[in-house]
Image 1 (tube, rainbow over the protein chains, first blue to last red):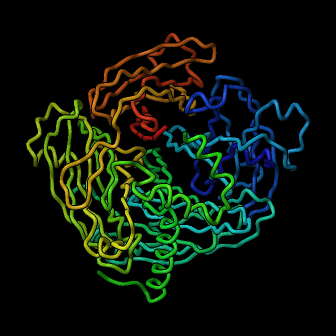
Image 2: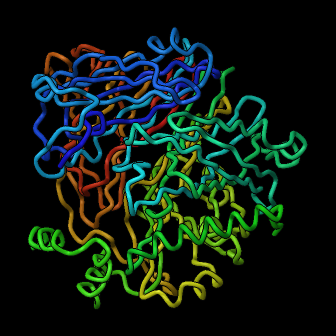
Length: 307
Length: 290
């Protein structure tokens, strides 16, 4: 099959400079599942995009030798290119044996069979200076927003990973990336937040440019009096249920919980909804997802419903 | 056999593949032979309550996300187990449509009279398929919901982090309280976490392994440095139990401390990979599935 070497193994990474979070990416030269691919050296590259989604630079980070792990400081590279603003970067790993054949990174190459690099993920690590770090591990899903005929791209997101207090805040980070460099769709992402009792407390829509990231700051989106009204007296935390959807694009979504005064940060991704469904008829996953998107659009266009 | 099927499927036009799959699996579920008509699949999660760390469950009604126009109010059960997989106590809860239910394990331990010396173990959450959802999906041949919720952890400083579920442990057929094991056998897999480990960054670094099968499992954790020097630790994890490998820079002082790599062997299930808990000297913490 033909594939861009940049798409063999990659991870789209939000650079969250506006939150003063340092970012490192940790890469491995081993198959995490052990046995599908013998360890070998990989060349690591970083694509850096402007906040508007324009590719600014693609840089070789270095090599990950066989049976090794390496951290690369992304913030150090991006700080001078895109200072103080959130934007997208993409970490790529390419077997060094392909690089040594003199391939052009931008050209598709012929690979025998379908290379199974599933679970070849990158460690995405945020930290505060002199503080702790929080990390998450994920990869670009195959054909993400490829725009290929017969492939639709859409999103349903839901998560409980929200907590707002005097010291904590939650950032929902929407990643708009594509394996197709010609991809140009500006996509809309709708969202709703419900209280623990099921009341709609906030909703909205954002547009996300291709090859960019969008950060939803929940302490800014949810009215302060609502946050106060839903504060748990035992721990001082206000928690809400988040749902997001898009008919336009498949968005990987990260949830970053920050406590800057403690020098503490944590991050986790959300699951694609189809993984929650185990139907006998596999087409039901797509049907259920599409029906849910339609229902959410209808409900939120009417201002939402109260339980 | 599966290889032959894979080859055969390449000759079937894309649009006909779902139909071909339905015909092939007409009498059984393609995901797991024990799945029948309707039900849920649940996993075990790690809980801890040690005086600093606590476990927080913010149980979102995930049915509402799929079926926002239906009444998805439902009920559920939380069961706490000790490190050996023995059930300690259970708690019933209800969760409104679009809502959630919140529990701290510290309170559950107190309310359910769990001995205070038990400070970590596993837990399972089982949410019942709401009646409205069940009626809505009745026309499907079969459908199971795999609850992959995010478990929360907090510390005394007020920080929180969340970690997602990774695997499966029990099948609950609709209408039955009895579980069926997802895994019929206890296997031995390897996992090579991609995360580079700079051990000096941490006051304590814990690697948590769960055994989701019905038999004990011997698991080893090896930490190697850039010179390929290594240290190993072993543990027998009881059936449905949990083990915590705890590391510090002192424990690994014979190794070069930066860009260490981990290797797990004897993992009882293919995707039952470890979770790491990172505790920092400034009091911050975070957790991550590998």
